[in-house]
Image (cartoon, rainbow, N blue to C red; front, side, top):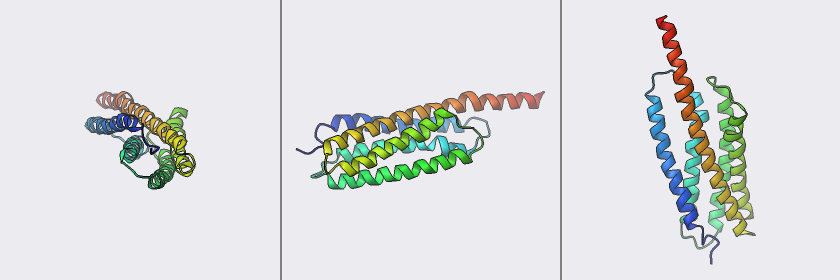
Length: 181
């Protein structure tokens, strides 16, 4: 019995959710792009793009686990690459968050855009290291990491969307009124 047995339903659920949320994020960003305001592309790459990346990682992890592997060795290599790539991407996100000028990140932003994803990717990397000696625990780490990334993506997508709609749109309306006055 392979250690992946019994995980199929879990990954079907979160993989499907991640795939649907990726599509929904593109729809929302397309609608937001049609709004008449001057946005900052740097802020988009700092705050919106990571949500899509996290959803894609969950989808990728789900696909990897769903493949009928004959062993765990290659899977652990993939997990290691995903975990390491994710950690590097978080540092890129931090750089982008600091570089953009349209929005000053608050504690919640650092928590959901940096700390939680950093923890999730570190857990994926850790699971790749411990998988040979304890494959069952490593699967729980990957599962927990997938859920963290899914919920972080949901939170951040919602946060980004509401910011565009309720904050930036209101600023643009205020600027238009000032121009008329």
